[in-house]
Image (cartoon, rainbow, N blue to C red; front, side):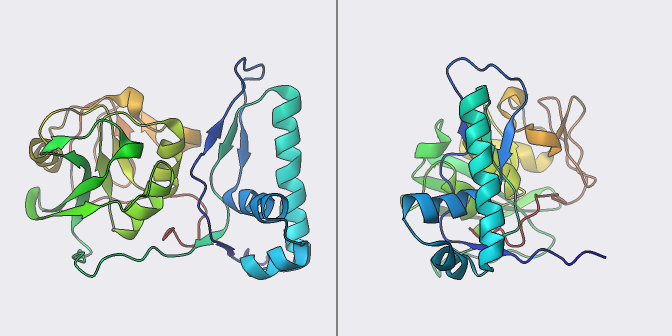
Length: 260
C-alpha cells in the first residue's frame, strides 16, 4: 500500500484560478495543483531556495523538487501549446482565516447559506462583494441570520473565507470561472445568476424552490453533474431549479484542510 501524501502547507491561496490565451488552440485543459502553484510562487516569485521552500511548506526538499518540476512543465505546455490553465486540487493544508468572535458556530445538521449582499439585495459581482449575509437552515426553515464583512478578501480568496465560515451553499449574481473553481475546491454549492431580495432568495433555497442560472455553475472536472433536478442525496445535479431532501454532503477535492 502506498504511503499517504503528506499535506503541504499553503500560505497564499491563489486569487486567480483560470488562465487562457486569446486564441485557444487545444481543447483540453491543464490542471495545476495548488501546491504546485505555491512552489512556483515561493521559488520563482519570492526567490526562495528549494530548501527554504520545503521549510515553508513543511515537506522535504525532494518533494519540493518533484512538485516544482511538475508545475514548471505545466506552465511550459500552456505557453507552447496554447492550452488553458486551471489551478485546483492538491494535498494541501491552508493557513486558517482569523474570523471575528461574533461569528455563530453552526450545528452539524444545519445548512448554512451565504448570499452576496448589498442593501438587502443579492449583490451581482461575487469578487467585489463587501458583505455576505449568512442564513442557517434547519428542516427547511431559516433559524438564524447574520451579516459578515469580507474585510478585503476578493475573487478566489473568498472560497476559503466562506469555507472558514462553515458555508454549505452560495447564492450570488455573476461569478467568474476562477472563483467557481475555488468554491468547488472548498465543497461549496453554487447558485449563480440570482437577482432580487437576498432574504427571498435564501428562503427559496431553504424551501427548495430557488430559480437560478445553471450556466453560472461550476462544472469543473466532474465536481458537479448537470441536467437533472437538484436533490441533495449526497451529490448535486442541476437544471436551474433546486429541491432539498435532507442536508448537504460535499465531495471536495483532495485537500487535507479547506480552511484557507
